[in-house]
Length: 209
Image 1 (spheres, rainbow, N blue to C red):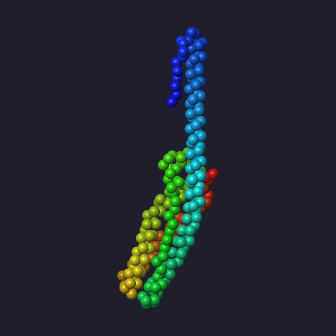
Image 2 (cartoon, rainbow, N blue to C red):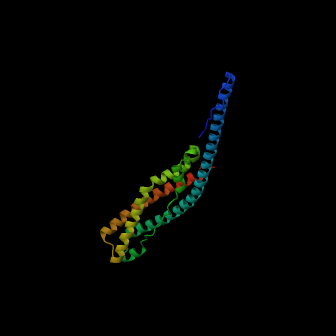
Image 3 (tube, one colour):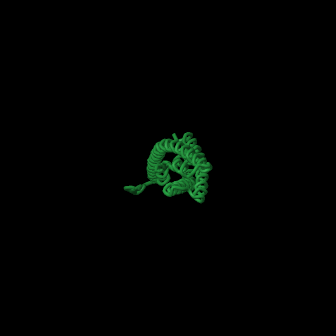
């Protein structure tokens, strides 16, 4: 808050009056300039901290994405083997022990990005520096429904297989449903993997400095 104090005595001439006014204006300009300088330094610090935190998060997410790609590849091979078994003329007793149900994916991190959005520090970074990084976080949000459907397919397949193993047989209806959710899971697996590949490229080419 700026305080402007009145003169100790009235101006005796126009010259004294204008000197007094000029002194006040100069003082105000200096105060505003200092305030703007402090704010500029504060914003630069916020932007620097946001960049640093997001860069650390990017490095972590790259490792997670690359690990998830390997997990998706393993699951895709497993699903393909399941389809081959379901298409074969082998008996249920031969098929059921070989059907695979294992799957896993690691959740990507987004706390640094979200924090920068909430406190406004993300807006202090030029858009040209965060274009690729923004693509990663936006597509991560958009991919949520596909991931949910993929998880549902995998869990449905696992439930059918577990039930069939307990019963010692795979009914015609269960076989058809299992075939359907397996092919669905394979398609979603491919879609997720392609998105992950694009995200990996985006994070590897991000412009944050």
